[in-house]
Amino acid sequence: MKLKEIPSSIYHSLRLSSLPATKLKVGDSKPIPVIVSLTSIPSRLKTLHLVIRSLLDQEVMPQKIVLWLHNDLKESIPGKLRQLVGPIFEIRYSELKCSHRKLVHSLMAFPTDIIVTCDDDLLYRKDWLKLLFQAHLNNSSAVLANQTRYIRYDDNGELLPYTQWSKGEHTVFNQKAVIPIGAGGVLYPPKSLDNKTTNSQLFLKLTPKADDLWFKAMTLLNETDSFLVDKRPKSPIPIIGSQKQSLKKTNIGEDKNRVQWLAVSKYFEIDINA
Image (tube, rainbow, N blue to C red; front, side, top):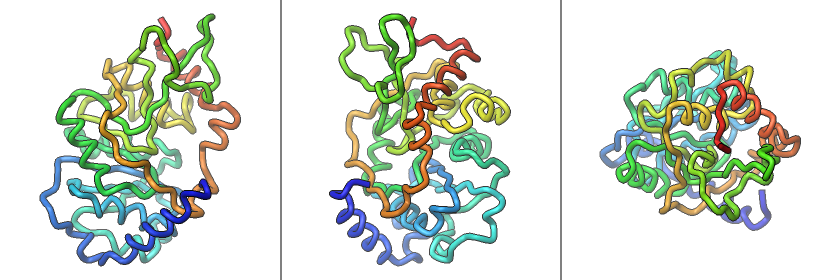
């Protein structure tokens, strides 16, 4: 977390904490046809109610917010999180321990619905869901994201380190190289991913710690484009103390994202550099 983000994090955490849980649980507007889906880990359970409060405090309400947790956590749900469970927010459980949980189970539970994924350590702005859904209405078949990277190769066709995966300067822009990043929120229309998306044996073998890369590969197999949304909200606000444990440190610091993209693209013979 950056020093300049601390005042905003404190302010919004206090604001969200002051909102009556009884009102948040039922909402005050007609929901839009969207399922918001996320997962979490034990170290973030104490602050997770703030994330859920930010999702329940949106300008437009989703049809449902589903939190997928590992079965081991059934008896460890903090009271501040449990009190938000109601008609909109629910907690479901899974045998999976990986971050892919945030989408794969909802794809099976809600196969005909729009699913929006988000992270468990950020507070989302009030217009976050509204802007994503408005973008979907203008491009209903594509995967849409508030944050993306651009998979890059060198002049010899070798995959560059993940730290160099950015849009940069390209003579010819390759739409297939755009990869949605889950932290900002990603919208998946129905049937936008390949039917192998929920194959846990494969994603645990190829991308065990990189759900974003797995979902990107599944959109490519399904010939679904991914786009960066033009009209985006302000960046989500980090929650103080929630990011001590993160896949970013391993995936980026040790370049494991590059290793996992090589594995999944080789297995499925995905060539976006052609």
